[in-house]
Length: 317
Image (cartoon, rainbow, N blue to C red; front, side):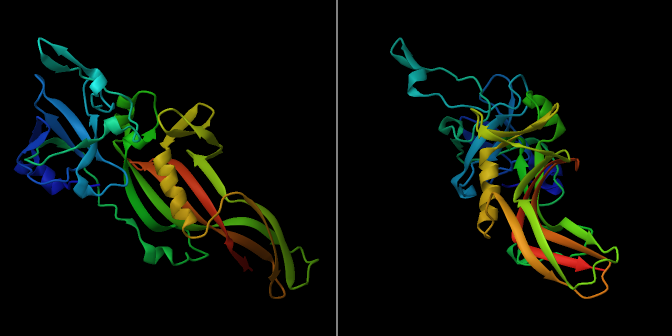
């Protein structure tokens, strides 16, 4: 995904338009910036759109989802007409426009190829930096057991169309047009022992059941929906709070965990912990990789934790 910085947004070349399916204006190169609001001049009224690149396609393909940025269709996706939508009048072919629909990344009729001429934008939503995805070098390392901060091993921006916080998309767009996704590494305490003086041995037995996948919505542990809805979203909810996340995003997150050996399910971990004599307290930790979803204002919305039970550490005092 290409994002325009503040410098480009403030310059004169930041203006542009679309006409007859071609990019025109003063910003002369594809791919299009996803945080810029672009105008289409085909209609009698200037219509503004956001262009979201297709998943799993190179930016050089110039293929996008087109999302209404304002007006009564704000937040809905533009959809192509099909042959069934065509009719004839006076020996002329008439193409009926299709009303915008809720976003669905699987719908091939919500996918467009943009031809380059020029492009212009009305407004840019400033993002602090370019998220560069996964850092394999940092991921290969383990965080310090005593660290108070999580190790950031990956960062992405995801457009609002892959997240549902509200039934009214226009309301959600005012909250956060983009979401920040970070992949973090941390140690989570799973059990501890206190020595009241009766235990003088140097061997303890760890026997604990660990759920490998756990989710938190606004800090509260929740159960993930078992099925996706008709628009390809999986839902997390508790009380009056709910959030939908595109299955495409969840599948990408799961793949990143499985590629390093993580598996779903519940595991009973049993092992012998050898310690020195005279101990007062023993803490046992499991390695967690956490996908954290935040709004652009920093509000933490969702945590998806994957516990890697092959990495267990102990600390004693």
